[in-house]
Image (cartoon, rainbow over all chains, first blue to last red; front, side, top):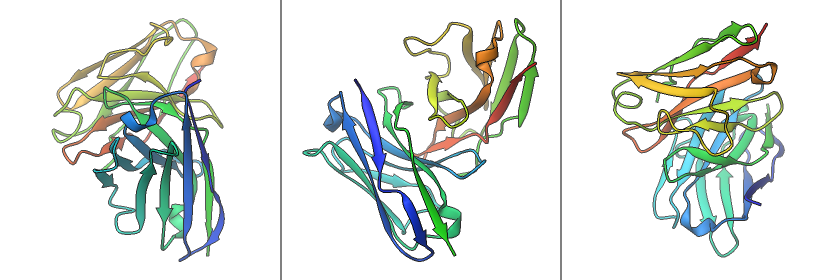
Length: 118
Length: 110
């Protein structure tokens, strides 16, 4: 079935780096844009970044611009989020989500938790 | 990239209808018909329930409907059921080619 599965979360100290992965299956990964969305504990959803189907276009929220990098490997059906200079306020569940043909996020992964300690 | 504005909470009794508003600007909600709504139960991933302002994905109940007027979009849930109790988020495409979410609305079914 159509599925996205995140991995790579964990506990990391402030200032360090972490790379998240999102493995896709059940659809033609290389034809869809993919987003990262995060949710801090007890808070709402915050859009983080998006990458186009071929990786040529990338856009970021101001809160992560210059620190996070979104990328993809279509040969491996995998999306990545490289997170550098992590801050306590980056603590959240990170979801990857598929960009539908109507610019909505139609398929979501189960999320991976990132905890940044001081 | 300011978040869209939603009421923090709404409530209704089973069988009633409720409406959740989502207010943005001409750079997001008012500028495009790319407003979507998501339902999130505790501990679960969000689920798309409305896209392109008023369209429902396959499998989503027709009790959910969406609309838009100017810079404000709305989600209406009719015939409230206990299973509708969840958090609801609106989202919009923006002029920056990014997305923005609302702060979320907690729906309580009394």
